[in-house]
Image (cartoon, rainbow, N blue to C red; front, side, top):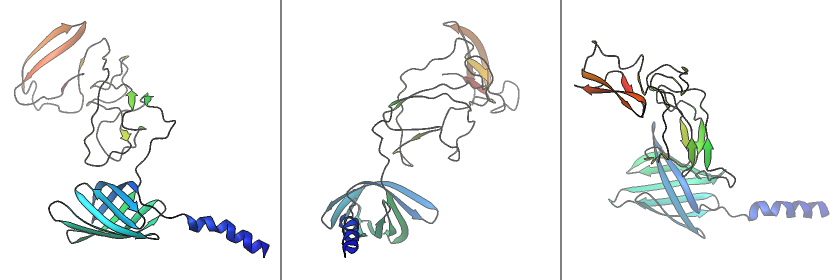
Length: 245
């Protein structure tokens, strides 16, 4: 009898914690191979749910772990959702303008309390193309400051050591926690420096003109603050001539 009582007391807290969907979510709807991301905010009072995702206003209810919601946007387009809350996510089936879709919602990443806001990143390699297949070199949050450097258009570092092939190699990529596909990122540069050497180098291997001097009418070298700068006047478009920022 004593063992049974202890077992029941230990198990009681597991069933006494109510499931809540209150707060912010990231909602992902999948229609065949197309995914749409939206920020979703839900408010729960008892079993009633209200919320919004963009201009879509939602109402619904939660019973245990089962969730049902429906909504309409400002143009009258309708949506509905039915799913379950499990493992910190909401998953299920949805309809949007009559089209059946899969639905998933997860909590956005929160900055850890001890996370530094200023980072210094020392690059070891440089990318010559943009791709989502490249692993991020650093995860940062909105408001963070990153101090780093990059090679020039020809792949040379500030000490004039070649670290990459040419073609404007880039430092990164950096992963912005909380950013979603389709977002516009605002980046503020606090300081930009260039090394005290030539600020112009021909990018090798990319944008090579079909004929010598194609598209260039005149080249003139000047000196600004001890740095050699080459100015070009393109007739149609630039061919392989890059100037450091």
